[in-house]
Each structure stands twice: as structure tokens, then as C-alpha cells.
Length: 318
Image (tube, rainbow, N blue to C red; front, side):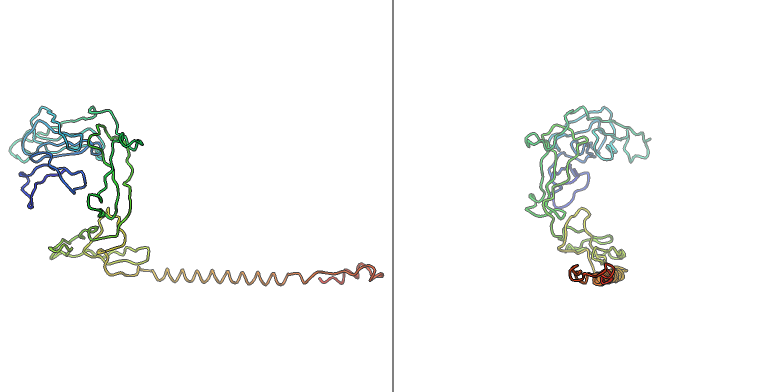
């Protein structure tokens, strides 16, 4: 969800309305007039918002991704400062913080008011995923690349899971699988953002802000033993692209100690090869030295009738 307006120019905040997107910001739909403070709960299955344009005594909530909104009156007339839930956003319980007077009114004594909102009684049915019957599944797949005309998003083509709008259930501790990565894509300029102290110019290129100083290059060694100087670009953290255009890589250099590692590896290889060769030669010499000279033939007793056994044994080479 977000606050905005329809048009080529952004309107002032107080002239804006509430919009919601279900496809990562590709398209937006209006959900309510006027500006509101909002929060999501139960991993996105509950949306809660309250007007911040003046004192109110109610909030609005939706359990179908903003298709329909229900108003809940909590009785007190307060200026809403914020809506909070658990840090991980998995709870169906919210805390609304407000005050009786305008938060910027320094003349009045600021007395904060806390309103506790519990939506656990809306439904006791937990959402189902991958039941084998897609008609009984509470989730649907969403492929951003399809809506982008086959283009990649964050360096990949992947299918994501989102709750169906007509699923009346709570997600709770249900763990959904990671997006199904169909293929990774080559890097393009869309996979990069401007580095610190850089902004995009009229041509869409990242240039150094006048008077700013670029960050020093850090020797982050790659698997190839090289590092690249910084440029005005950096890869978007979630992008999974590989190869292709890399505007974030400047002039490359060998990492410190790279050649020492190469020489050390080469010397070790030579030493091991020499040791193996020496061992092989020694074994060969040993086998040749102790090999049999041939079969030994002893004379028949008829040929040496008077031969003594001791004389026969002495004829055997030692």
C-alpha cells in the first residue's frame, strides 16, 4: 500500500489518496480517498488503516487484499500517530497509538492513547498450501515476468506465491516455499542502482553529486583472484543476475598476494611431482635388483651318482 495520486506530477500529501498493488508495484488500484496510516498483519492477510487527516474513532480493515473494507469503531476520538504489530508481521493483533490533541499542538498537554486490536476471532481456519487439488489451495502463483512481457525481474524469472483474494483464512506459522526460480538472466542496467554519493542524470546514468567524494575502492577478491575499482553503480541486493552488462565493475587488478599463491602452488606441484618421480625410480631399481635370475635346475641323481648333498647346495647361487 502507499499514498499517492494519478498523474504525471506528484500532488501534495494532503491531496493524495490510498493505493494498493498486488504485483510488486507494476500496477496500482485505488482503495480509499484521503491519506491514511496503514499496517499489515498475518504475513499480509490483514490490512489495517486509519485516517491521519484529523481525529477519528474508527479504523478500516481488509482480509481480501483491499477488495473490500470493514469499518470498526473503537469509541474514542483520537489523532492516530501509528499502527503497530509484531516485528515479523505474523500476528493478527495490532496496537494503535494516538492522542486526544493534534500531535504537533505544543499548547495542549499530550496524553497518549493506546487502542488494542485483536483480529484472531475473524476466522479459525488456517490457510492450506499445495493440497494436491489446486481448487482447494488457498494460494496462487504469480509470475512477474509474465506481466512484464517476458522480461526478467531482479535478474531472474521466478514464480511467487500469494494468498488468493477470496481465501477466508489466516496464514499463522505456515511456511511457504521460496520462489520457484525458472531461470537466471544476464545482468542489465536495470539490475543496478546508483552508488553512494551518485544520482541519475537526465540520460539515466549514475553520476557523482557535485562536491561529493566517491567511496574508496575495497579489494574484494573474486574467485579469479582479481578485484574491481568502484564505479557509480552497485548491484541491487536482491538481483540474481549473472554475466552480461556489469557497470559496477571498473578497472580490474590482481589481488595482493595473488602471484605468491600462484608461485607457491607451482612450487608445491613441482616438489610433489619430483618426490613421486624419485619414489618411482627407487621402486623400479629395487625390483630390478631383487628380481629372479631364472629357474634353478638341479642335476638328476643318475647324472651325479657320487654327489654329496652339501656339494649340490653349494652350487646354488646365494
